[in-house]
Amino acid sequence: MASVLLEVEELKKYFPSGGGFLERSTGSVRAVDGISLKVYEGETLGIVGESGCGKSTLGRSILRLIEPTSGRVTFHGTDILKLRKSAMRDMRKEMQIVFQDPYASLNPRYTISQTLMEPMEIHQLYNHASRKQRVQSILERVGLDPSYASRFPHEFSGGQRQRIGIARALVLNPKLIILDEPVAALDVSVQSQVINLLEDLQADFGLTYIFVAHDLSVVKHISNRVLVMYLGKMAELASSDDLFFRPLHPYTRALLSAVPIPNPRVKRERIILSGDIPSPVNPPSGCVFHTRCPIAKDVCRQQVPEWRELRREHFVACHFAEDVDVETNSLPLGRR
Image 1 (tube, rainbow, N blue to C red):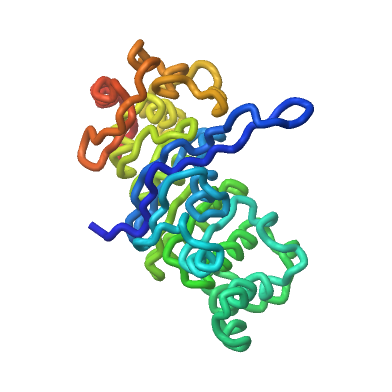
Image 2: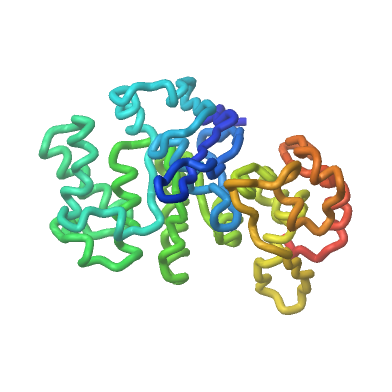
């Protein structure tokens, strides 16, 4: 097995919740609530869940774009949450991010050349001539004409702007890239091109990805392992094949039942969850999913489920995961 590149331990991010005339804090929004995981060199870890589950906040907290409330984030043996600003700036060469909105993430007043040269200037890498050469080679590598370097962001399509965002993440030769829903704002025809580009870049440069998304079909295609989050907590973690064909958590099972199967002969039971996602300001006691879970019992309302390895490298937080496993085996979840 590959060595561990990143390890997250009991990571939490609570946002103060204010209200009233004086905007006094009345509680905390538990956006990320005790996440622990390992990311191995060269793999792609997918993170999925409904909107508001905390997956994007988790990615940004790992990079300290948002300061976590507590926990540990160890990158190459260094706890980056203990680093001072100057040391953290040096560490950012190794850890980059691609944002969801390819237009909002680019400075409209900068040419593409200025956008790509800025990280190298901040980290004092190369001389001016080498930086220009680096910009041209990176643009060519992401499928753009090097002559585009003199243009501005508004002159490009959404797919081209996202390629520029990927180029900016690559220009410092990082080891880890967090992809925060990188294809969500793109047309379907362009999504596959960007996904294929990301896979090629990973193979060529030995990159490690954390791929945050809500499109399960895209996550299945690109990810080696998948983490399912619900209300800031981990619900399930497994290899992509294992999770998609033998889910152990009722929430994962409900998510997968909504994925279309491109075969009209294959039928699948559609699982409709009742109610809305509870407020992260006041999450339910016990298992946070019990208010919507079709198999919830008294123990689910009273006790937080243990994070356990039910099958090899397949982890789940559910009191009755064994029952879900038996039922899942009888359902036509699709063909390998």
